[in-house]
Length: 417
Image 1 (cartoon, rainbow, N blue to C red):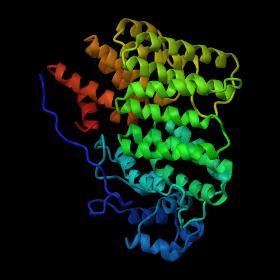
Image 2: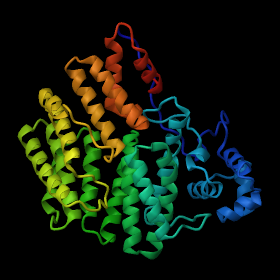
Image 3: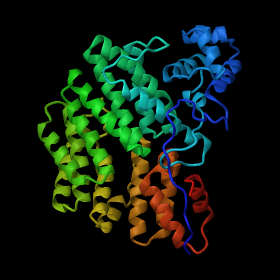
Image 4: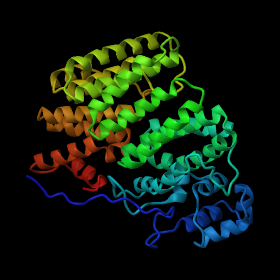
């Protein structure tokens, strides 16, 4: 039987405090609570965070806004995750009801501000970390991105962007621009996945500006990859295909990093071609990507851009291509007996489960579809609850069952249907 679904998404406000109306605890109060749990006075916290005591007092009292850099410094001083300081948000695109997952939307206003600086150096109340420290932070952020840990990623990313902007604008050092480009790329991924496509577009443009200043010839091609992913999200697969094909043709494949970029671009071209109904092109691009993945697998090395171009990811993309082309038998055949390695990013493994849930749903195999979308939530809960394809699968499953299974009811609740 069918059941009504309601609710809409709305953008959250521009203030860093996720609840300016006072319906829940303020950012300042959360800072005070974290400070007291750590056994610190305001003076002690100020010393550890390298800010003035008066700033701490004003923020805790609600007289001054807590900036991303201050939140990050306080979180480090109190040995807590920045998400604990941010708290929850009253709304946002694809919003859920889970208090923790809602905190990811509270990071969007500070990300918006961090992206707005462009070629202006932010005036930080906390001295920026060194480039070595920020490089180490980006490694952690990339791992959070791969794990689809949106809450923790969103809480830590704004301060990193602001601090790197200071280094890049004031020093104009290629390394600073290279790290800032990486931070922008992470911002593109996070904002796009949460439905903030306007922010994703801004982040893409910022990455495009940083790339030529970074002394890394591959970054401009990775900007094309980010832009193509956003275009696919917006339904412009034909433009995405043209973009990644051109970029792939220009990549220098003489070294491992270039081959990784080349393979990743062809994986994206395969999906883009499939979405626009060009089956032959889709499988040709997939074959080129699979060939690159096999070559890389034969000579394992570092993955500096976190692209994970390997045979396992090639199979996952093959399933996606087949499903996009309506060749569900091929998708099922490729998936049969296939278990993605845990070394593959949780985000990528969960995405495969969502793709296969869609495949089973199209084949009217509803129990299998439910099992796969539940698998996706188990692997990467924050991603699965906000992914448009997963949400559509759950909506359709909810209209199929005469008596809705308890597991599906629980997932509907977590997705805020």
